[in-house]
Length: 268
Image (cartoon, rainbow, N blue to C red; front, top):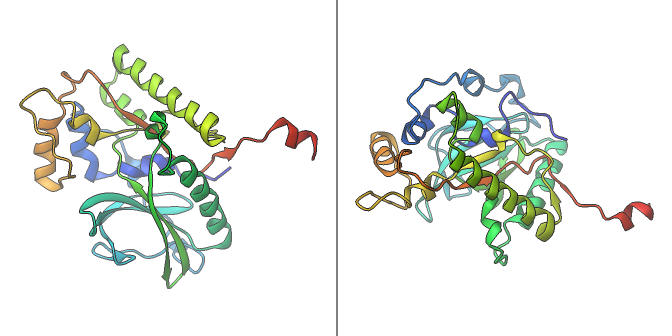
């Protein structure tokens, strides 16, 4: 089991100021208390075996240009990057370089590879966050594993807080639960993976897919805009009052494990 920061790894995807337009797009105009997500990682951890120092504008692996910081966890920092090859935005998770962190990263990578394998045609495979790429980054503090993940929206817990009492509509709750169960069934039966940490913080909204479901006359750009353009575009794209469908994905396989058969247990 991995040690967690005040906010889970899934929440690193869209927890800072850069995601404010996303919450507004989903009908949340309240000022959320995200103090924990705005806290910085321990600066003393920027040492050999620890975090890799990253600056906005850096380019990872000659392909991923850093746009802004999304968040941090005990094992890693996570960065919003522009994929210069494909012209899309992604989340790049840069793990600490210590041996234990590298091993944890290898374990997570194996799980993500299994859940994201391109040969899978199972319809529920899209209920799981997708691994897009992986590479190693050599820096002043060692060699860091980097996982490139699709960029998702706010976590379900944050979205719940936006709506306050009585919370999300019954229609949305049914859709979310159905999709989560589909994702878990895919992990269990097809991938032989147990997530172990299902909670609202690890269920993320897919903003791009919501934007494709707007009524006629709405915009549905496939790219991820930024700045003022993003704020105005997203608010036009996603009107929560008109949303009849919500799309979510299960994230954070960092605590997941493989299913162990009863035969293996009896023969240990």
